[in-house]
Length: 376
Image 1: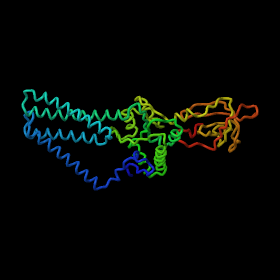
Image 2: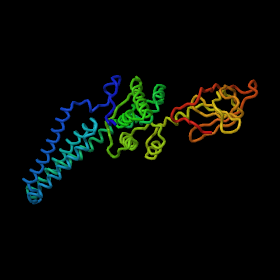
Image 3: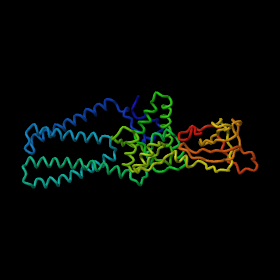
Image 4: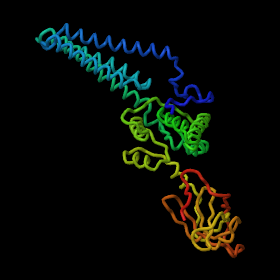
């Protein structure tokens, strides 16, 4: 199964299209890799040479070489950590590194004013430069991310499930969702994996998610940003979303019940599409009338079952003989279940004297995610 990022159609805006590493020429990629490793080897050799020549703290030759090797490995590890950082984080890191170097210079002036041996003072000066430079880079990159995605921008992270669901596109078209929509690269990666699945149903769901994202990007009133940020704390997409939402002070848009709970516990605002769908369903009170299409028989004797356009189940007493017919009923009770609302009613024998009938006929069962399939 391919684990590369999706190679999206040309209809995607250029500035929002994720970078496909497979499009880089192999020769250029190999050359870049060799140059990177040569630079790392040079860094390690330089550190070893400096520590051997200066012999700080009176270390012998091999001990000094070991100390230099350890310091150089720490710097290489920091480079690996910063490799997946965004452009804003790198720019902030550069500014922070310059500030750290200035602070190291001030510390070095104080160090050379002491009576310590010359090799020890030189080593402390180099160590201060590395330490302050490292701290400046890390803090600068973190603060750059904070100011790039501040709480005032009201960013919203899109989960994989909400893109596959598809209703997010209609919500955006209805202008019920504003602010920039943030789509991390690891969410696109998961969509690509689903679209490449051997299972036809999963493959169709993955392609639907990519199509929904294209549809949202074409909307003039919605800004979509593809984020390069990829938290390394876990391989789980949900955990990465939570960590990224905490870092960017963003909200999460999802219809995943478990992700909703985990994010809410950590103080993250969650926009749940299923909860929105339940909230906007029409309210039917006992005694009101409606017209429904009896689709099938119920579990109890003489019961018929109908479905509203939003997938709400309607159980009608005495409607078993009226299957495949449209009838007028009176609502007797409404029950809220974990899967959604259920409406119970009976045949309206006196349609002329009944209250105004609400048109609520449905051609059949709604199979959208988040709506009950069966609840009788």
